[in-house]
Length: 200
Image 1 (cartoon, helix red, strand yellow):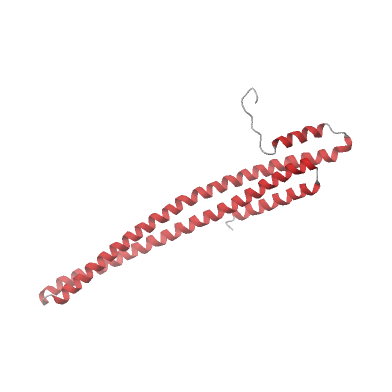
Image 2 (image 1 turned 180 degrees about the horizontal axis):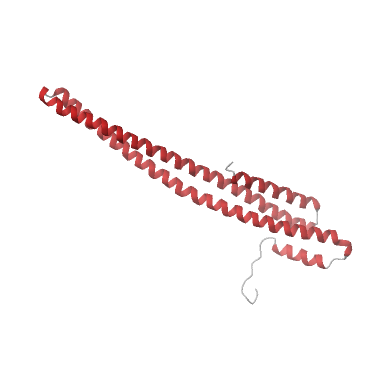
């Protein structure tokens, strides 16, 4: 704990600091090792920054998916209400048709007017219900797209985190193949992040 308060290290920060301090104490014969340490330290910082951006984007897309799904549910409920209203009008129209068929001739015109009105109202209600269903489908699709994108961002972030872990191992073991594996995973993570940004 410093005089200013707590200082919390990341999972690889301590190793990077230790390795960097060790590099200063090496003689000229170990310059390549010091170069490797410096290179890994810089690349790790870049990977961590990109990973933080990917993590933020993943959180943002997940946050968007929830309200979109809620909007879809609201539109579905409104469409269901419209279809219930449509059914009520259909029932009234059927009763009016029955009344017209059994009514005396002088009453038939009045019932036919009601039937015509119900038919027009039903058509208007049906258009509203279909419009609401289309809006619900659009919101559902948008929510699914956001969740797919969220999963892509999460995959990219995870790969970059593994890459950072490999960087720490490379610093400990001084193994070049571990450094190459770190670069390879970092590249894969960036590619997956690019897919996420392209909605693929």
